[in-house]
Image (tube, rainbow, N blue to C red; front, side, top):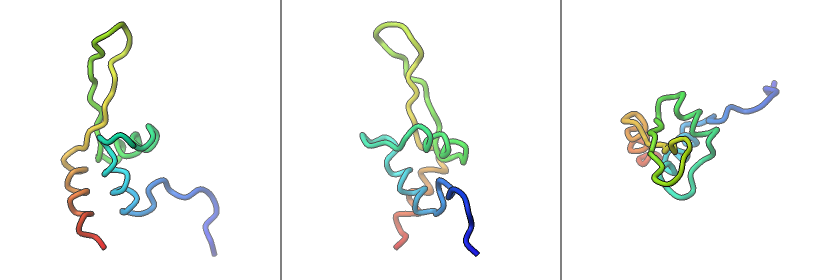
Amino acid sequence: MAKLGRKETFATSKAIAKALKTVGTSDQPSTFLLKKLEDKGFVEFKPVKVTEGRGRPKLVAQLTGKGRGFVALSSRWK
């Protein structure tokens, strides 16, 4: 019997690895996906002070140690 409903955002480990490899590049995953990765402990957000004008600091996504380890491990998968 097939499951009904929406699939999990990161149904496979390869989907997580693909999203993690894009962190810090120009083609970053969406904020929603980054927040999901943050919930799993792979990504953390660091505030960067905006030099011009007023407003909130910009948040930049960075890999955690767990995220870097997962990307290194995934590079050996076939």
